[in-house]
Image 1 (cartoon, rainbow, N blue to C red):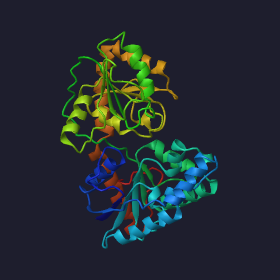
Image 2 (spheres, helix red, strand yellow; image 1 turned 180 degrees about the vertical axis):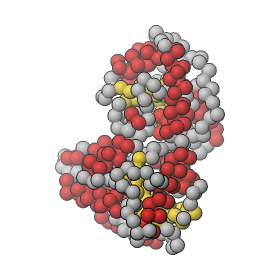
Image 3 (cartoon, rainbow, N blue to C red; image 1 turned 180 degrees about the horizontal axis):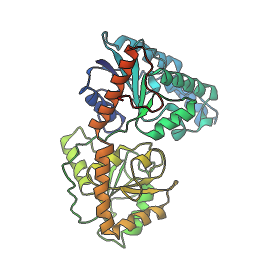
Image 4 (tube, one colour; image 1 turned 90 degrees about the horizontal axis):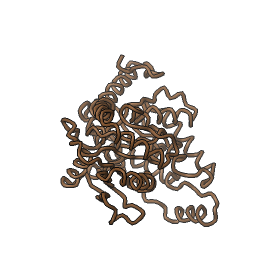
Length: 390
């Protein structure tokens, strides 16, 4: 089968988040199909409209328009897609959803996403900051686009359920397949059981709960002098250079061999990934840490409970997490080496089973092949969670 893969991310732009998921999804689909690759970059933002919207929201405290998905920008993307769709391909595959919702392909199409726009919006913005009619325009258009797809692959059951509820869709074509990390999986757990090290990986220190981890480290360091803390990503929002045991590494680019090696070595010797996030839906870093056998402490919210089995592969805190809760969770593992060793073993096994890209790619490919076979035979695609390969 010939497939046309459409994405906003060039293969040269792989930093570690959505762009990495895009590249890795493409890699796996290439194992099953003849895949054409087309980059459709985001259109230039209308600076005047964006400025007006920000001014209304931030200065006048009035609602503005959601200009990133304005009718003009969506139409531009749809036109670009029509130009880049390769002839002779049997189906289209879209990375993401919202930017493509003005597209009306004549071929059957599939998509892969973390969440729908409705979920993303409510996780990031205040609804009152934008015109209700403008948001509803996007939601209606996205709901129709999702409903017309042969299949929409979600990173989590939670993401698929959120889309069904938000848009009132049966969502028979929604399939949760999971997603993997963006590092090579080591052959074994090489943890040395020396000085315990906490790790925080965060583009935005505070949004990922760095302020809470700061309090925890200050609380536990006097009791456990050997405790260390490694921070990757955004700089702490308070003086840190003279804090004993704190190591700030900045942003480590996985496209750079030396920085990738440093990233992997930190996870290899990490005692815990501490991720009390305030915004993530499905953090890649939890799976990446799991590859190395490193358990995670995070929040019992979003799709995170699908990444961490509480008390088995890591620990979940009830939202909103508090520094005292987090400190108690970390200390419970510091004081129980036997339970911690068992948790490492299970964290790695769980990540290899549920966050392995080869398995995810095979799930998608089998379902897509089944959908297109049924379509060619004039029958409906599988519904209601039925196994498309059966």
